[in-house]
Length: 454
Image (cartoon, rainbow, N blue to C red; front, side, top):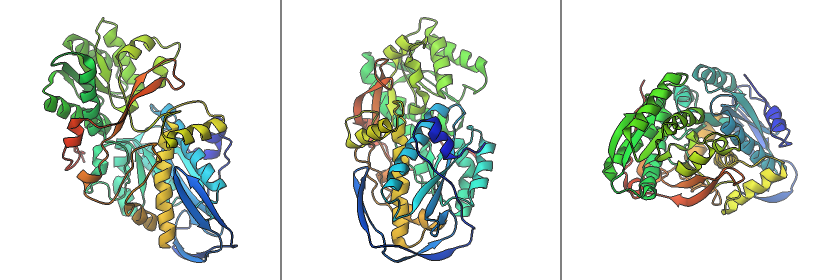
């Protein structure tokens, strides 16, 4: 299913009108420039100076039309699958970000246009839509899902195209895997180390025990691997290991895992799954009278857990600790304040996930600017520019990223820690910003915590 960003923007009341265009697949060199006006714009804490009229020879092949003045970017997005509510808000963040950039001169006078498609969180659909878009876009502003991005990774490398994963699999920080990927945020396994060490302090229990469970696949297994590493480092007894045992679409597996967690008597529970599966396991476990501190990878959380009509609202507010990768709606950082102001002005309802769209878009923005500066806006030129970025700053919205150096030095280790709050505009509040546990700080990253199969 292919959805123009124009449709999504109207649906989310953003009021941004975007169109799409593609390249012809053949490399050309065109002189870019027009009048002599110089403008300075500020976005996400950085100033960008655009000189219109500065004559430059720019190489292009796919996705950049200098005559039309457009740069087309693809988003492989789960809009209607299990992460649809989250990803739709992230896409809205992209649209708002690029709307601001385009209104202030674009990329040296070139308008960025989004081509948004709905992958439905289905791997074959993801592959099909990648094939449809790869000859239309200069890069992919995000690719939702670990297995899905894994499935197109070899093709990205063969085709020489950049993609920003909308997934925090630890392998994206491994140079043997990420040749065409620009990761960001704390990987699932290091995130798990952070949140479990924090949970131990919150539990109020000496020598707490832990139960670990997850869905299969790179998302669930990478996160569970980090949880196991944290338990070992902290000397926690794992009283139940349900790693990979929750099967999406199999309600019986949810019930079985929930029962086993409750029967384990664990003080801490770490479950990584989709929000609907997480809430099902949680709800069934606490229905037995079981009580513990609960968490999981950030995508396991959904603000709907604390909606007025949610049957788990009060319990989850008591039990859950949430991990997050960036500052939130109305957060204290200048970057979060900017996101909030822009989305409020667009009439968008509060949610914390817009910021992720701004983070992804900022990374691509810097890559496109660098490619223009290099005079090479071909697909391979944008990829090369992205891989040369030494620092990308988000004005406090998220921790600074760098893409030059050794993996252990550049892998992200900071997270935000939130707790559910039904009275908060987005259902949660930040209790610890830019948190790094002792385990995560000391962890030597030499490769993926969970090694991909195939």
